[in-house]
Length: 64
Ligand SMILES: [Zn+2]
Image 1 (tube, protein in one colour):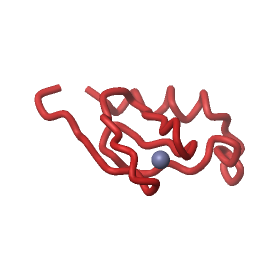
Image 2 (spheres, rainbow, N blue to C red):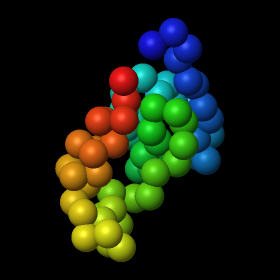
Image 3 (cartoon, rainbow, N blue to C red):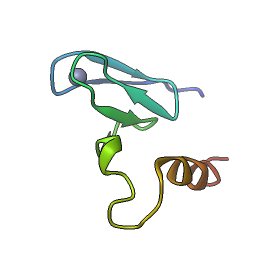
């Protein structure tokens, strides 16, 4: 990955988006590799019926 995404969390914590999902230890939010805020894990799959693991697996297919 040539460009590391570094973002500032809503809580003011700095997040280095080096992994596919990046967890903020301060406020418990998750961001993806592009620095986009993800829905809380407890709500993942609520509408689609997918589990968090399904979503991660499915999305990583698009990462080439
Ligand atoms: Zn935070």
